[in-house]
Amino acid sequence: MRSKDLDTYLDLTSDIESKGPYYPLRIDTEVTLKARFEKDGFWGDDFGLLLVVEKSTDRILGIVVYFKAVHYYHCVEVGYILFKPEDRGKGYMTEALAIFCKYLFDLKPIYRLQIQAEAANSASCKVAERCGFKREGTMRQAFISRGEPCDIEMYSLIRSEMGALPLP
Image 1 (cartoon, rainbow, N blue to C red):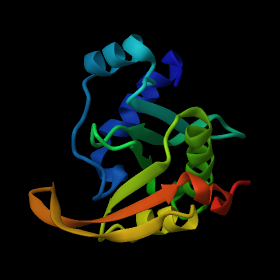
Image 2 (image 1 turned 90 degrees about the vertical axis):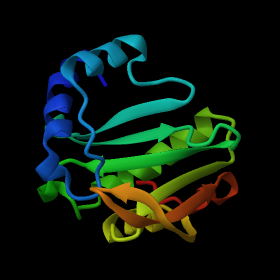
Image 3 (image 1 turned 135 degrees about the horizontal axis):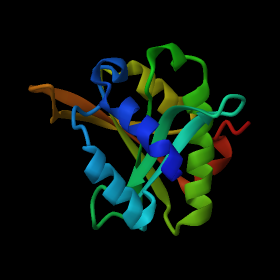
Image 4 (image 1 turned 180 degrees about the vertical axis):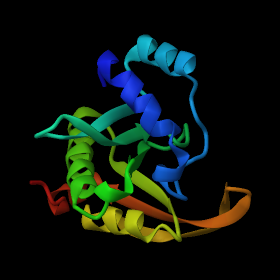
């Protein structure tokens, strides 16, 4: 993320309709977003955000993030989104997630990455599986989304499974 990307990023993350039904409704203010960026550029020990960009146009397609979900786990959780519906289903996120996972394993002393996806979000679940993540089970009504309880699918990728990633 570069400072020149902040306005576009804010516009994309504020467009609730295009993000779809599974992206959190929270919207950052411009002041909050810029203050967080100034602090660490959206990259630290327990949180990191990278843009998914179309190489030929430099257009921001989405993001991949990691964060420390539970303080006592020796793993990080990974999340991702493509902002515009017309960019989905083209393999962008599978490629970005695979590269991101390899980068995290190369960078951090962790042995596990995990993804939690709403059970109804079949596209996200497929991306996780295409990147070698194994489904571990369903956490029933573990999340409130748009006022309704929903089930969450838990996926994991262990460092020793790294070879399974579909890297370009």
